[in-house]
Figure 1 (tube, rainbow, N blue to C red):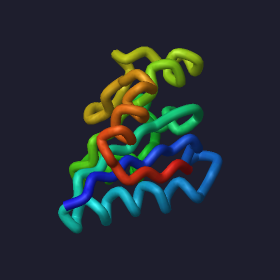
Figure 2: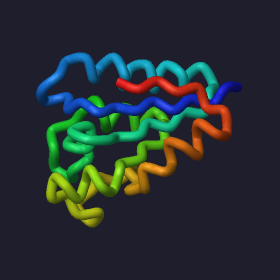
Figure 3: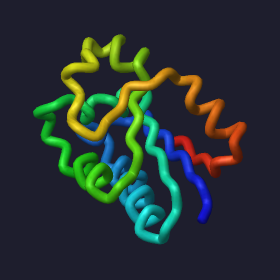
Figure 4: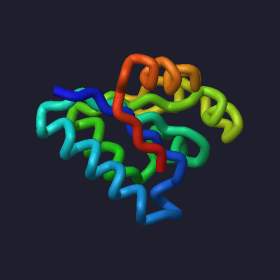
Length: 108
């Protein structure tokens, strides 16, 4: 089992490429890997409760650990209490921590 960290900076409402990252995260979990998806910049937009974000919901349902950068959330006026279930707010330091621990990393 390998450990992966996928970082998504784009918003799926604006970029169709986000579906690739979501799909990859799900496929890696199904293959038995430990996967964290870190949402940064506009990537945090679908993490809002009530957002029409079926792709992110599928990622959460698949068992991917979903983390949202607290600075990106704050800059976009998204309070932690407004996050959809299954999304954890986190400091961006988590990226360095995961890389130092040897997680295979892909930034999109």
